[in-house]
Length: 156
Image (tube, rainbow, N blue to C red; front, side, top):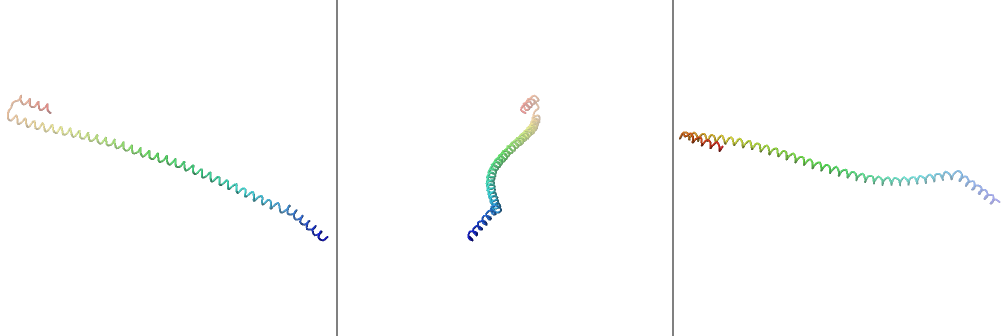
């Protein structure tokens, strides 16, 4: 009977230990395991979400780079267009200035020509007067001299 009473005592102790463990020890361990599983699941979900956000951010960066490159291309095109426009404006101003200089030079040449023509007339008239004086000294025939002077006037 000692063996049976010992076994019975051990069984009762074992059952009490199992009941105590199920009532007081197992629920906190089970709760910690569930909490840890939940944290692991949340961590995996957060990692997956982070990976997706990273992919989205990379896509956004690529899109922004394309926009920036397009904008840079527009800026460069506008700068080239403006440079060409400035060059054309400068050419036009230079052409206008050149035309003005040419017109001034032509006017100056025309004035010089008129001045030289007048100077030539004065010299010719001096020569005519000298010639007339010489003719008058040699012979005095008024009708003949008037014809000569009329011809000289017509030539001038």
